[in-house]
Amino acid sequence: MLFTSESVTEGHPDKICDQISDAILDELIRKDPNSKVAIESAVKSGLVYVFGEISTNAWCNTEKIARSVIRDIGFVGSELGFDANTCGIITSISEQSSEIAQGVDQAEQGAGDQGLMFGYASDETPELMPLPITLAHQLTQKLTEARKSGVIDFLRPDGKSQVTVEYTRDKEPRRVHTVVLSAQHSLEIDQEELRRIIKSEIIEASIGQYLDDETIFHINPTGSFVQGGPVADAGLTGRKIVVDTYGGYAPHGGGCFSGKDPSKVDRSGAYIARYMAKNMVASGLAQKCQVQISYAIGIAEPVSIYIETFGTGKVGDQKLEEIAYEYFPTKPADIIGYFDLKRPIYRSTSTNGHFGNSDFPWEKIDIAETLKAKFL
Image 1 (cartoon, one colour):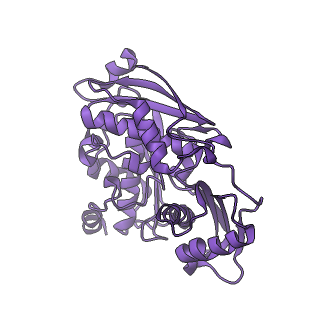
Image 2 (cartoon, one colour):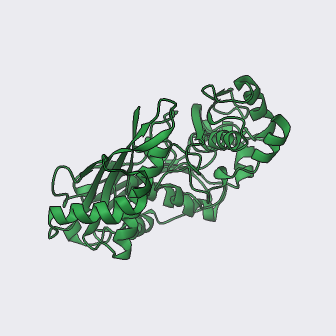
Image 3 (cartoon, one colour):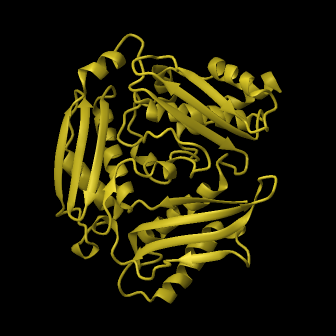
């Protein structure tokens, strides 16, 4: 069995937009923790468009934030086709709908929208994440680190990775079958030299333990990749939701995360679903766990929680659903309080995935021991 996941660097046009949207959210929450924010961004060539709805007592300079994000990523200078200092920025932001607010701003905070979210965990990696997306993220992180540190001076901000993992019949990861990596670069570098350096300094240096003599490599398979970023491809917030989650290994509810404050269950609901799944796997109650949670707009209690352990559970899936209600926060206000989500932590989630990073509060496994002692 072969399974493939992909990731993208911080300079990918869609990820530029995610970072701008989350940076604006961070600034508003920093000044007013009760801000209600739904901000999206779009980029193309020399233009950034920031739009959405906000309800807040704070103010932020969206143009300054957008330019700062683009500058941090590394798009500075006309030779890259996109320049933080000269790009045009258009904003179109209105107040949040009062009809939505009446369901959220009440004594028991209701969900900011209807929707369904998925969480997933597997014991195949230390992070309790699927191996393909974990390796894909490692490659894009390594690309960015090598570029920003100057270790590889021909790299530019845009880039993508794709990793195909071969599994055994028992669905245990065995080896990396294929690596695809596309890295934006300066005009001067020779393609053969680029491929040699990328294979050695990026791929082998970051995921070498999974490679073997039969692993297939496709490095910049179309040839030169000089023109990248928004000049080559339009970007939009929320278009890399599979990169943000489990690399396609588990379902996705459809809603994106970036630019949304935690009253939007697209975000906080997905975080609690991951937390449930991860703690259940960490406790030994299952080797694989998938959680679906759903909400109705304005209603605090979830409409449903569904758990699937794919035959790996030590107790029944229905019992795990009962455990989910009893041991985990499920109402939006409780989730927000439990993870302390009214903090400016969101730009750090907008690259390299929202899951698998131990710095994020929903990645804690602090309930696992309780579950293990009680149910095993």
